[in-house]
Image (cartoon, rainbow, N blue to C red; front, side):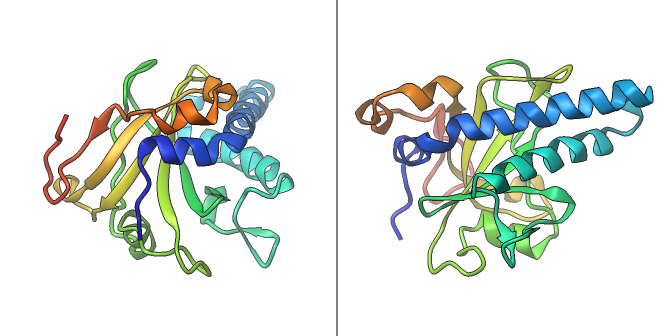
Length: 202
């Protein structure tokens, strides 16, 4: 199966870029409000904070018909994992630790999960004959979503950091939702990787 370039992927996903940004922002606002009312500190339980963000984002995206579900209702991934299906693409939206505005974060490895390993290795997602599997990494600064996010095309990996293989990765800005499709197709990723090796090509 032809694997999309960065420009092709952004062009195909253009209609949902604003929706994904907005859903994550609403999740962050809700998480911040809940913590403030309960006098919780995010640092005490960062997993709970992020679960709240995801839960709200999943609800928003499901209402728009974008969040993957089981039996048309229950979220497809556990712990309100954000999984967007659109135009033949399956996008796992993941929080990434570290980094700063405009600086690419560490790309996560799939770990020992067979389902994640299959996703990273571009095996078709459940119920689809073909799928182009992408990672979309988001970060926030004290509860404010950072623009850009980072779009990544994985090739494979397991629980070892040195097992991770990628095709490309690049910045996804909210403003790309308003660019001309012809210009999006010409976009180049920030990084491309060796076709059959593990080292970065650029």
